Length: 178
Image 1 (cartoon, rainbow, N blue to C red):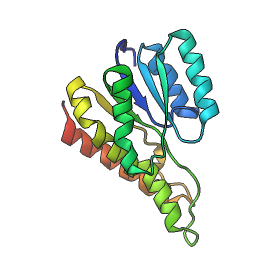
Image 2: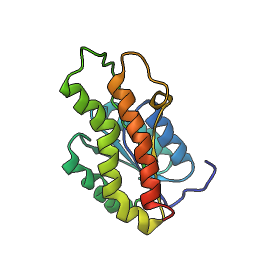
Image 3: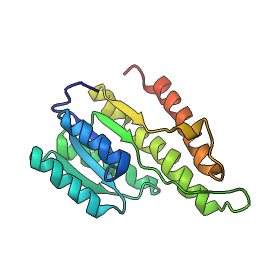
Image 4: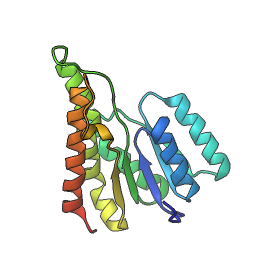
C-alpha cells in the first residue's frame, strides 16, 4: 500500500495490539486518520494513540466497544464520521482465538469465536456501507491461512474464518465496484 491516504479516515477493529497495531501504523504513515477500536486493551490503545498523535496531532482517536454487542456497531461508524468527517476504510481485524477441540466445544465458545470473527464484521460492514459508498471507500477483512488449512483443535475458529472469507466475497459482489 503506497497510496497517499491524507484526509482519509479508517476504522480499525482490534487496532491496539499485534496485527491491528501494525495496520494502524501503516495507515497512519500513509496519512490516514484512525479510529482505533479496542475492547479490553486500553493501555496498549492509549500508548499507540500517544505514539501516533505525537507524529501528527489529533490523528488518532480511541473507541471502546464489545463487538459481540451488535446493537453498538453503528455507533462505531457514527463516532468515526463525527470525529473525522467521513469513513473511507473499514478494517475488520478484531479476532478471538482459542482452541475448541471436538468434545469440549460449548455454545459460549461458538458465540465468542463466530461473533468476533464473522458476525461483527458482517454487521459492522452493513452499518458502514452507506458512508463507504459515499466515499468510494473499502472494507478489508482480515482472514488467515487457517480458513483453508485448519489447525487441529480449532474447529470453531476455522469455521468462522472460512465464513469471513465467504462474507468478503459476498460483500464484494454486493457493494463493488462502489
